[in-house]
Amino acid sequence: MIKTFLLLILMSANCYSQNSDSIPVVTITTDFGEIKFVLSDKTPKHKENFLKLIKEGFYDGTTFHRIIPGFMIQGGDGNSKDTIPMNDGTGDMPYLIPAEFNATLKHYKGAVAAARKGDMVNPTRSSSGSQFYIVQNPTGEHRLDGEYTVFGQTISGMEVVDKISMQARDRNNRPVKNIKMKVTVTYEDSGWMKKNFPEGIRNY
Image (cartoon, rainbow, N blue to C red; front, side, top):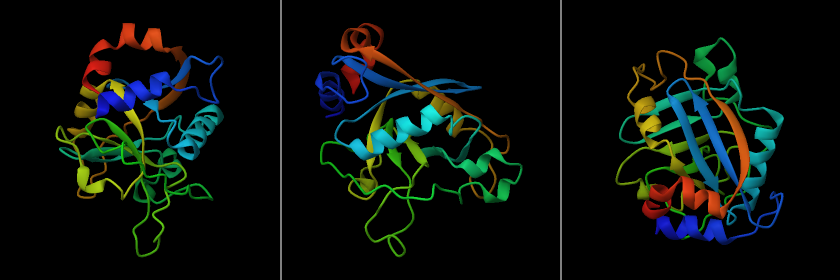
């Protein structure tokens, strides 16, 4: 199923491409290495917002502020740029993104999904405007399918996700030491994808 997800992305044209065959590949650079993932055309609002924030440099200097081994790593909160660790995870953009659930986009290992507030205050399950998480559980987190919008899939760097998830953390699951990120995007064609990430294409 994950393989189908990636192949559909590779075959799809997208509005951010510099040509009809180019695909945006997101790279998160950390002290532990790089994580690369692709964005789904089936979640256009999430894709557009994520690329916009990257272009603005919003994510640079933010941290992975919540890590739970065997579950996921979470980041993207603008508050994590300041020197007040207590407010990490409480920030957001001044807008939410409407949920874009799709039956083919599931919480497999490496899935990139949008964080959100709980159903009591957010019955439409709208997504955070900036916070996201990457599934680290080897068997996935399918209890979250249809609850949180999956909008991307990791193609490289799962070992980095694993390392980050295992770092020392406090009782609130915040890393003891800040894990900062720099986020960039490049545009590649499907041939480049198949050449450089054959294992990713095969496994996902």
